[in-house]
Length: 55
Image (tube, rainbow, N blue to C red):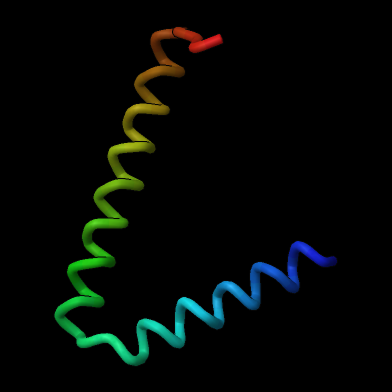
């Protein structure tokens, strides 16, 4: 329950920051984050298919 409260508090802070940022900055930041997540997902999928482990 404490985790949910902390997550909602963090979400509120982030959304409040985005509301005060310019639209251009918000779009660029969203694109950077989406690209990073996409690269991470592709690397994870590729690693799982090859059966490699980092342990």
